[in-house]
Image (tube, rainbow, N blue to C red):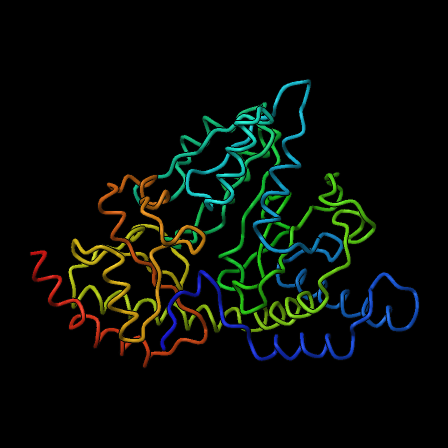
Length: 379
């Protein structure tokens, strides 16, 4: 099997598995306990928090562990939805945010707890800065934008949007889930008040993530309790946190090498497919994550292409894992102006440090033959 769906999840690194196993076997105490067993667990918690902070250019006190980016994202929306002057606050998200984030924001609006507006994107999937400048005005409570899109890999203009949010007096949140470990990130200078991420996108375990809360920002607790500086109660998922810390240390040490490796593989894959098949690449005119390629092959349906690939041992996806399998076209691609019938043909190939040139070449060698008959039928 050749796995090309790393934006859905990555294989846990051996160092991550070792860190989690050691925590379960040795440092299994409750970090809130004052005795020696608890203090050993507290040390593991602190070391992992420092590792995550170092990867992100944050201070350890700014790292709040969560169950993942979905929880962190929706915590941001809930925290920002507190009524101001008796009126529901205005939340401003991009039209290409993760579907879970958009659904949560729409639910708040339907329940009368918030007002919601969406920033449009251009044909390449970048937020339209002229439209953003009109929308980000005094009175907006929160601006939320992903650093890079999970489907197309298109990198968003977070610095420019951060400046607009600051000028309007709005809070700024970045969903950095897909960017971490692939692009440099510096919380201290990115202009964000809040940042969310998940460990399993960076060779860590599932079920653990974090929300960065800028030092000095008063933010409501998600769950009552003394843990996580009284911001998220409940005994910490220490094995997951230990694994997250190990993944963060690896990502920091390998950031440049991994970026170069992924860029090489993605370029080889993209150019090779374009030379062999009728391919349309989505977001091709914008800066993209070095590991992500979103495309359509001829007029073929994505389900057919993915089924042929999987039969031959290549695992990929049609878009976000959270919305895969439905009949609706990608909201990301339709926001980019792609007609629904074309959007339904999109597949996403997303790479990781585990992929090799030999795997890319194997796909390039096999895929034209796998799709020759359906392409001929569609012609």
